[in-house]
Image (tube, rainbow, N blue to C red; front, top):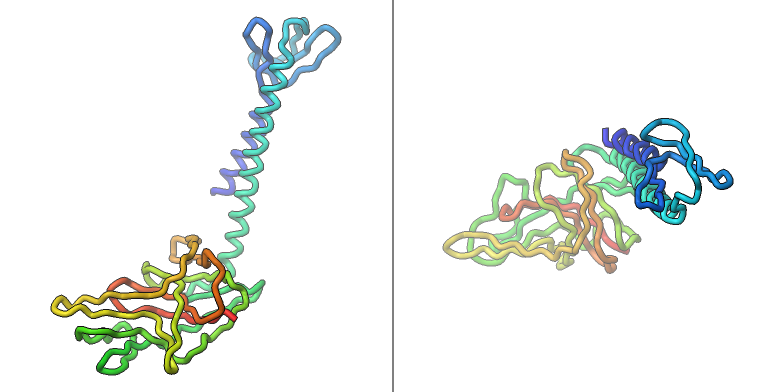
Length: 255
């Protein structure tokens, strides 16, 4: 529908470009489609009367007519070009969307090759030990510090592009981010948690990277990429709901 609308507007703009004002030296004008100088006469096609007419050239302000009609044609040509480019960009985006699976997860296009990221096994590490996060076992609400960790000190997929583009198909309408993770003693720390005493509230801290985001579909497909080049190191794309402390994590490394 949008593509057809863009084409309709493009055609309308081209039609409008054909009509302009033929200015007379007395300050009036005629709306014409075209004109030509024939000796000391001006022949023009009148839009009002849908016919060819003529008048003495001495009555016509050709300088003002040419200046205004030229500026109008240039403006409409730019608008038509913008509509054409917008339509082309929309078609490219539709092709891009078709390359990404609809299943929740994180994906990347390396040229024409689709990379599918594996969901990492995240655990909560408190002073009572480690417990696997599966959305069913909340973190024990014991005042103090805790961390969300994933196993190993290296990401599952190495990427040489320092500004990689990711596609995240959300499982829920949650928040998402690219975060820098910290390798430590055989694990990588994704989040740091502070469990407040008495109120038993959890404060989450993550080293989020500034990103650009683009919503591609209403069904939860988003494209994300870092605003600035990433330094060499360990990172992850995370989907989370603030206060739940049960993020979904897809790890990678910049080589």
